Length: 214
Image 1 (cartoon, one colour):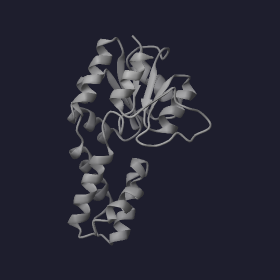
Image 2: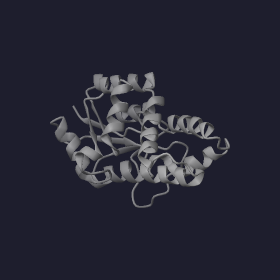
Image 3: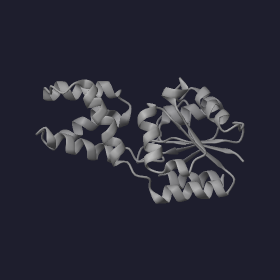
Image 4: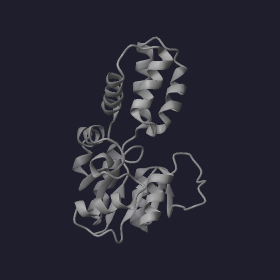
C-alpha cells in the first residue's frame, strides 16, 4: 500500500479560479476598473505572496481604510467560499484508494484556510490524512514534511509518489527526498535544470492515472 502524496492548491483543488472570482467581486465593490484584476493576480503570484503583503499592496493602491487584518480575513474567506471539489478528482482519488494507494495531502499554507478547504469541499472523505506546513513547522520542499506525512498515516515513504503543480515545492521536494513525481504543468513548460519530474500531466486526474500506470 504505497503513499500518494498530493499537493492541495491547483492540484486537488483549483485555486486560480476561486481567487479570480473573489478578486473580481472585491474590485467591483470598491469601484476599481475591471482590468485591475490582472494587477491583483500578479501581486498574488498564484498564492505564493504572503497574504499580509497582498493586503498591504491592495490597501496602498486603492487608499483603503480597512485594517490589514480584516482584508487578510477576506482574502482567506473569499477563496474558501469559492472553492469546489471536482467530482472527477474525487473519483480519481477513489480509484487510487481502491487500487491500494493511500492518498495524503501535503500542502504549504495556514491551517485555518487549508483545513477549511479540505473539509468544506468534502475532500476529507477521499484522503487518508493531511499535513499543513503551518502546523508541521516545516514547508515544502523540505524533505521532512513528506516524512511527517508518512508518519501521520504510519507508513514508509518507500514507494511513494509526489504529485503537484509547483516545480520548486513539489517536484524539488520529491527530488530531495528521493521520490518519483508527477508535475501538473498547467500550460507551462518545465524550465528548471536542477531536477525534473518523473512524469508530466495536465491535471490531477491524469496525474493519478500516470501514477497508477507507473
